[in-house]
Image (tube, rainbow over all chains, first blue to last red; front, side, top):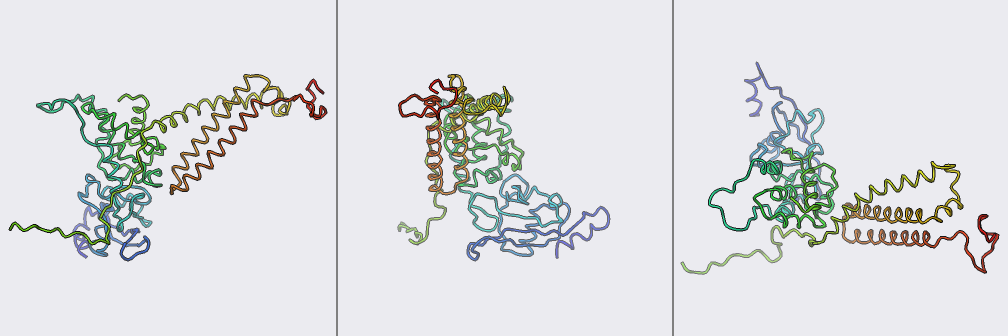
Length: 252
Length: 160
């Protein structure tokens, strides 16, 4: 195969170790399968490869019908969130050597969202709750003639929640979301937090009102699954707690 | 050139792609906020009330051996213990019921199941609270009346 010939010149000095790994993927083709099933693929990979590279080898060289999302492949676009060895991660940020390659690596679509095919889920419920928290700047009065200036201190207040890439790893790791998908979910709350605590924004009350709903922040059980799942290291549970605090004191 | 272009519509039998995701109606009340706050505050109060209750009943005096009908009657003769036990009953029942309510909300997958589980919960709550409150307020160790057999009364009653 092409990959192996690529690797041979390097195999003398300073070679990257390569090893075989079994990737166990939850496959589902709505046109043929009644229900999802597991399928094993054996791939030969390098120590520097990520799970996404293994998925690429499978799709390009073994089974072209394997379907998954990925765009930038470098942890910025948030397309390839999946459940890897039972934990939500980005396939492009999970090194195979860190995933215990001696055992099969399980790869499933993220939970709580309808599966469309293989690892692709319908993200619409996720984005609908994102839209409902109004993730855009709301202001009144005249437009300033230059940028809306903000002090470094004010910017620091919501810095953590600006990192969100909307990969849905947090929302689909939340047990409350799994039940009926009505809970707004950590990602929507994180993105509301980003504007609620922005000193330039005037829509905090509107967003807090949305999140005061039966399906809002009060459904959070602080299980910290979201904080653990976030590939950007956002302190999601802390952000949710801050929104709760803002609702209790009506002060941002 | 100016002919009206007819847009080919989808076949009637096929659903429009990505039909809108159905969300439950927004509630616009502070109920969940107050419920959340109540759980925290009643929790703190219950720690004091329950530990106090256990200490007085099981540690002071003769400990577990003192608890009998007369002991309970003696405690409920004082308004202090009536209020203590009443608030313990109400807080524990509200705290527990609200806790089970959130568990039902989290785990029941169908609206019908959710509704009936909650109805059963509220009926159990109402029965326990009404019965408990009735007992605390109407408890009388030495009832007086013509049809009461004096020998059945506890030994500390004056009628005996």
